[in-house]
Image (cartoon, rainbow, N blue to C red):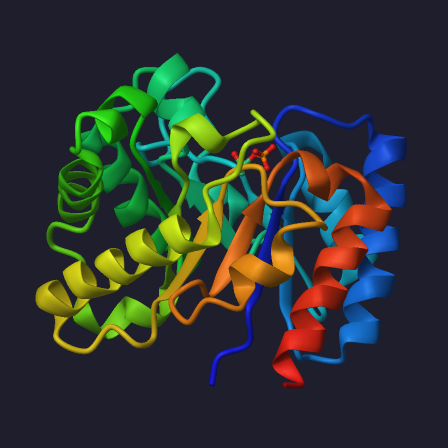
Amino acid sequence: MTPPLLIGNWKSNTSYTEAVSLVDASLEAVIAADGKVWVGVTPPFPWLMALRERLGQGHLWIGAQNCSATEMGAYTGEVTASMLKDCVTFVIVGHSERRAYYGETDDVVRAKVTRVLEQDLHAVLCVGEVLEQRQAGDAEHVVKTQLLAALEGYPEDKLYRLVVAYEPVWAIGTGVAATAEDAEDMCAFIRGVLNDRFGDSSDIIIQYGGSANEKNAAELLAKPNVGGLLIGGASLKPDAFAAMIQAAVSLSLI
Ligand code: 13P
């Protein structure tokens, strides 16, 4: 069975010095996990290459938080997947903060998934509903629409390069995570959508994200359809992140 996948999304945080001490601390926890948990972190763009050189290619994976929907060219300020290829293993695509603050549509998200695959990187595709949509009973519909739009034309021989992160927007940065039951229900729903879309989707890891921390990690990860966590705030605290890795290791031993 695939080990649980924990990814720290650092967002627009850390100085370079803080980034180095965070990866060093995370690496220690990852080495102690001895392959029973897969772990990645996504530092800000300017630190990526130096951190990759520091870490090498094993143990702790380095990812990017975003990439351009375009290829190289006259697109001022954009960072293309081809530029990221030599410093990261995976790219987060379609995070709700990108959708909400930078106007990323499903079409843009799909283009980014395509760019990521072209460079043989892994895509962590984020989907999730806002509170009003959940309260209106539309959560599944919203998530399914985001998923199918982003995965239109997705090649079936690249399923192992795809991670889906269910991140309910109302749980992100609020300190109020989804209950383990709600996370499980939506991750199970996503599994069903992926199975309908691709036949067998067992190569695709499905994560939960949104106020995951060292207190709720074990309960969330114990759910059969929650294959990992996408972690914001808690991934910036070395002790909390290490405790989450340890929680995942303990579950893998059961
Ligand atoms: P928090 O863990 O801070 O809620 O952030 C979740 C997230 O957005 C990860 O991508």
